[in-house]
Length: 142
Image (cartoon, rainbow, N blue to C red; front, top):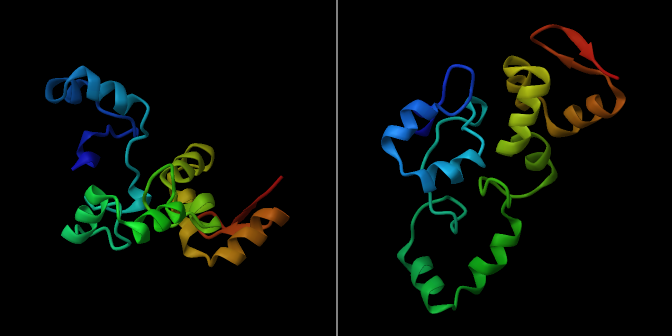
């Protein structure tokens, strides 16, 4: 699992990776944030299917350039992480990039608690500066 290639501080374990991968792959990984625990286990998946399951028919459509349904659906997938539909909730809370930002700004425990609130409640709390975080029972605001 890719999570095994991350140090306790949440950074890529470069010493371990250098022994396993060529430099061209390491250069690509340097531009890619490490996996975050708040996103759950890293699981391989077929990015052209909503359930991330490989389908021969979709692979065939892609190869034959007749995949209209797939081409229409990729505009709804997050272009940063390919991990979910690019709706406002995903962009602000669940995208790997957003999770990384929240983790850096607020710490891992607080960032992990964000997915416990319904989106409208979370957004309103952030806009008004009155988001109460259960871990510390304090408001974090401007």
